[in-house]
Amino acid sequence: MAMRMPRDNPEGPTSTLKGTTFYCFADLGVAMGCVAPAPLPTATPVLFLAIQLDIRIDPKDAATFMLKLSPLGKGGYSQGMVVTIDILPKQGWQVEEWVGPVFNIDGKTANIRMDSSQTVAVRLKSTTPATATPTPVPTTTPRPTESPFPTATPMPTYTPRPTPTARVIFVTPTPTPTPRPTPTPNADSYSDKGYAFYEDGTYQQAINEFTTAIRLNPSYTYAYRMRGSAYVQLGQHERAIQDYDKAIQLDASIAAIYVISQALGWLADAIDDGTRADRSL
Image (cartoon, rainbow, N blue to C red; front, side, top):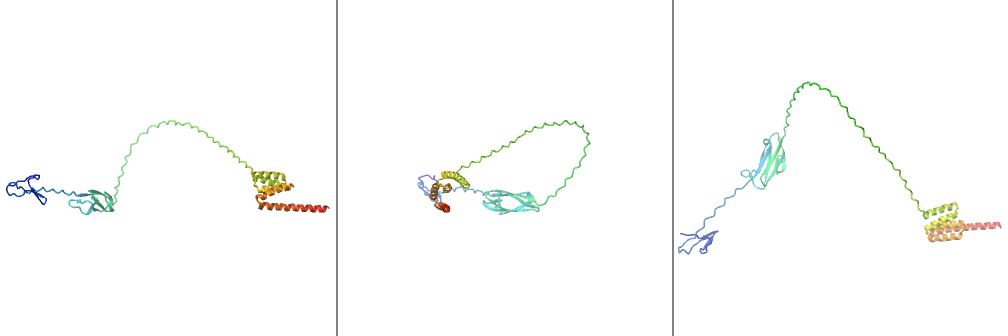
C-alpha cells in the first residue's frame, strides 16, 4: 500500500509534471509508484450584473416607446452602450419635456449613454383643446327685509388747529464790488504822457515824463529820441545831441534817420535866419 508524505518531508523525493507535485518513496523496500494529490475545487463563476434602463411616460397612457439598441438578456445593457429612445405618442398627445441624462434631443427622439443604471422621464401634453363645461349660475335667494336700525346722532368732527407756518426770510447778500487793481506805472505809460505833453507844446513836462521812462527802462530808444526832440524845441542843443547819440547806440537804423531829419530841419532854420539877416541890411 502506498503512503503519501507531507510536501515538506526531506526524505521523500518529489517530481513535478505540469504544475502537479508527486511524492515517491524508495525506503520501503518495495517498488512503489508516485501518488498525485487530489485536484483543487473549481471556482464558481460570478454572475454578470446588467445595467438597467427605466423609461417613465407621464401620463402613462399617452404614449409608448421603442429602444434601439435592445437590452441584452433580462433588460440589461453593457457599460458604455448608447441607446436611442423613440417615443410614440398616441393621437392627441405630443412630447413636451425630457427629464434625465439624455442628449441629442430631437422632438420625440433622444440618446442616452449607459454608464450606469439610468431613469428617463418623458412628459407629454395634450394637443386637443379642453371643452369648457358651463358652470351653472346659482339661484339667488332673496333675503328677508330687515327692520331699519335707528339712525345714530353723528358726533361733532374734531377740527385740528392749523399749525403755524414758520416764515423764512431770505436775505440776499449784497455783492461786494471787487476793486480793480491799480495799474502799476511803467516806462510805456510815462512815455505816452511825455508824447501827449510834447504834442501840446509843454516841452519841459514832456522832458520830465521821458526822463522817468528812461529811468525805468534805460534801453528805451523812443524815449531818448523824443526827449532829444523836446530839448531841440527848448533850444538845448547840447542835451539834444547827447540823447540822439544814445539813441544811435541803441538802434542806429532808426535813430540815425531821425537825427538826419532833425539836422535837415536845423539847416533849413539856419538858412531862413541868414536870409532874414540879409534882408535887414
